[in-house]
Image 1: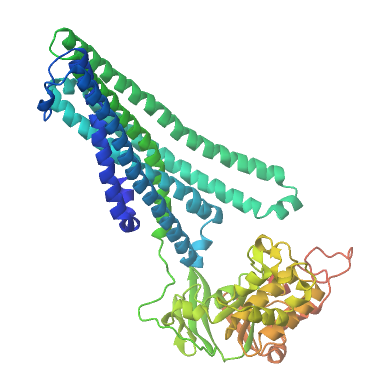
Image 2: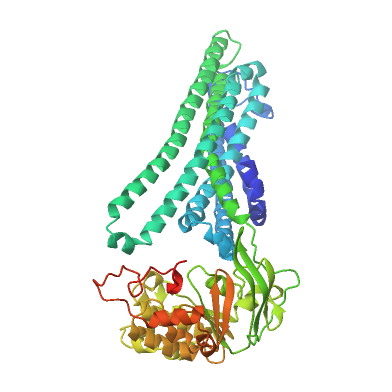
Length: 615
């Protein structure tokens, strides 16, 4: 736990004054708690037993009557209770509220970090597990930190204070009361490690379970379409059982630990009661002093029980903190390099110089070299997995090449500040990603500060206005998560409007017409024609309707540019892959029952990508 607090010290720093003040107030409340048994001693020994009052600093009350002593003792008791409660309230509030603010800062820092980690990191993670860390693990760390401030400090202070007072009263009696402490500390040490290990395993499995739930719930249409509900039930139940077993192990250890502490504490209390009673009967000890001692012994083991429970909370918190710091410590491999400068007003001239890109040890782009002039439209075609998306992702620096350079306006993109570079690039993805909110908000998302007039202008150019006019709330219509209440074509037109409102000199289109019916495709191409005017455009496409209007075509196969040129130039290559690709698009599949297998072209051998015959 100390390690976790040290790791979170940068988050603790803004609240150190409040935490120190709260700690001081808590310590003051501890002093009042230590004083609580003494008025009772005065009442028993000096009021009921009529024994002389022997308390340091109170010699002036030696001639008081029993009635005066009783009144003073009751008044002192009430004053101690009230002041102790006041200091305890102020200290607890300062520490707990600081803990809440601190953990809010941690959550925001983790969220901000997740947004800035590269796509390489996110491609290796599961969204559900990251969500679990952001919410559940943060909550566990919050419990640990808050409990550390509100439980650890006052209970440790209470233990130290009581030992000091007990030693002052009777050191030999104190040693008897503390005789079981070594066993208690040994139990805490042994169980804390085991609970921490079990908690770490439980948190890992909870993250995996959350990832499974997120994955399946995000694919409910597929699950229902293939009637796989029972199969997913079984998989979830199996994973849930593993998670339950891990949590039950941690609960079992804690359930064993707490009674063990209670038994050891009870043995210590019994020893004090036995020895103390015999000493009172022999006249060596007053009844009031015994009651003070018994009060301290009872209070002494209570903090130890609280600290034992804290070990379970802290073990869970430490395991969760480790998962959070995997995110906070993750290297941001795409970041502003030293000396990177903003570069507003890009023209959009793009050049790749012998670029090689690798994901780990797998090279996905080999020696890619080409130049696109400002305002030129380039179509990128190739089979699935050839490296098309990887190529265009290098322009906004979603990844950095292992070798070679990507230049925009003759400047290496790594020498341009990321915010400046990406603010001048607009993207339309194959699967349009929209956010829950209004249509207006989703379009305005393209550029901070976009006015309603700019949103409306972009909407008209993207033909969004055509279907929005039919909606009762118009642009204030709230769409569901990921725009689920709109059709595919409508969602894509909204994403085009979002790109238009950005008004960026570089545009990247990733198969924007994929999966649309001819009518929707026709409308989308009309909207795209308004978008690409005057912009350097890279369009990943398979359909001829999107390709033929490009100034140039880059044909990629297995991470290499194997052909490039205009549509007309590439069609003149008799054995060119591009020509084969377009010819296959113009061919119709054979009629059913003519001997063709699904996926065959004209009943011949099954092709691989683009219908190219197998070797």
